[in-house]
Each structure stands twice: as C-alpha cells, then as structure tokens.
Image (tube, rainbow, N blue to C red; front, side):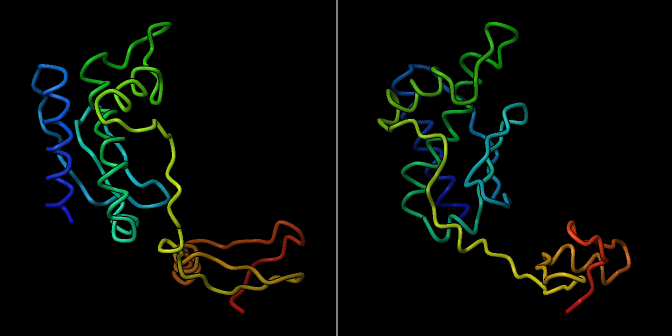
Length: 162
C-alpha cells in the first residue's frame, strides 16, 4: 500500500513539475490516518497521510482522486504559502480548485463519497434506567479500567454493561 501510494504521489508531483516548470520536494507519506477522512496534507511538516481502511476498499478512487487532492494542498502551500489576513489562501479555495482542474484534470471536490462501512467500529451494549446505549471500544475499555463513568443524557443514570 505504501509503495503504491508513494508511486502515485510521485507521479502527481512529476505532472505538476512538468506543467508548472519547477521542481517540488517529495513529501513524507504515512498510512496511519484514522476516522472518516480519506487523506490529509500537513503543510508545515510536508507530509501526506492516508487512511488505510478506506484505501483498501477504494484503491482505484484513491489513486484517481484522493492522492491528487492531497498533493494539490501541498502544491498550493509551496506556490502561495498559507497567506495572512486578506491574502489568506483557503484550503479548498480558488488556487486549490485551479490546480485540481488545470494540473490533474479533476473536478475539485472537497469530500469523498466512499462507503464508510469498513470503518464500522465494534460497540458494546450498556443500559441505564430508561434505554440501551452502544459504547465504542475506547469508552468501554475506559469503563473497564475504571478511568471513566458515563451517564445517560435523559435519565442521568450511570451506564452499566448490559
């Protein structure tokens, strides 16, 4: 996965270099992004992060859309900086949109439409005085270790394992 993403990132930068007539350093690539985001560009540290669970389920779309999307963020930062005040460069502003269309030939979409089912997290049943609740693995483990107690928003009773 890392090698395939690195190769695609390099191809996107090579395309940008050919069209813009200047070189760009290659970013560090990490495959450790969690949550609903497919990718993330960290501008100051010059790195790209990708979500491995979403990548596995959507490889073709990642190569076609997500990688150029994140590379475009780094390119905007390299070309225009972050800007301050009135000259501020917005994350998905006109510069980013322009690069997406003119360099990568893509419609500048801000969010993906991937199926998020691969991200479904296991939950644990808990009860209060009025209903059943589903707690995430993280919250369940905190309860088990005695680090946290959770209460129902309606009846205010403590949640206990069902």
